[in-house]
Length: 399
Image 1 (cartoon, rainbow, N blue to C red):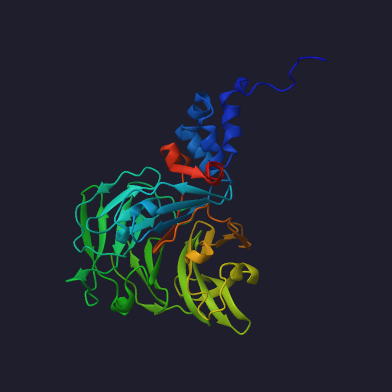
Image 2 (cartoon, helix red, strand yellow):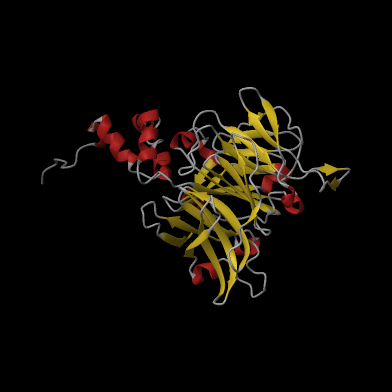
């Protein structure tokens, strides 16, 4: 029997071939591969490799879903999870110590808004403190944008800027519902906040993130009332609000506005003659006309709830980015189940639904759940401490 090995040693492959093979792997596999040997780490860590993976069909337009659970008595019991749709797996992500009442997540960053405003990249948790907001607030909408924002992929170029909209502040321990807080835009070059017109008065009865959803789309920051269905857009160049309109398809109980690819999407819970349903509509941004593009399969919808109560769907939430929309239940007793809808990037615009795997155990009981989507780059993940981002498989083996 011959001792000749018909398969070449991987180490004898050229750098170009090694780079091509590694580029076909999903991000979790690349994270593990980077620790195999120095040569692989060298290939994976180069800027050219990061650009190569982002352009690959496996990696582009696949934002991750982040679920942050905040405990009401001890920050040690806070948990943060991230879902990678390519590998169909959850990660346990280190959540830095921070005031629970003011933590917010938005594309690529964690934020706190009170007592001071600070931000940290998701996978490199080091807090950067800005000059103070003119109006300290809790539960505002916060978004990341630049002069060249790609709403399709969620990636931003140039220096990111932050916009803070709405929220509430306390005076003497009471919520001040009369004060329409000005919009504030942060300029990182000057470390200063620019004051802009506040949310239109129509949103006064519900101007915190508890009652609002938002979407960055074509140079505008859209704000939408989850229950009121009021909608208005803030022009990021002209710094003016558009006229408030009402966007309420028939039967809608509550809904969320999402920027997906080159579309504005409304996703919401409906009462229809056929019974409860969760629908998606494409919105024409100029006329605010809507057209239905998808309905969540009935068995998927009911897999998110386990109650016969009339308001059993009230705890459903929805976020999205790129070509993915995530729908989940923020109630603890169901362990935060979720589904996602993937919108095809071709002309068909076909919508495909699937369930997400369960969160890795144990899952604590949270008094507040924060959810958002973010574009994720391999470069940012590789900068993260190895023990701070852990796949589900690794957690299961250690349990």
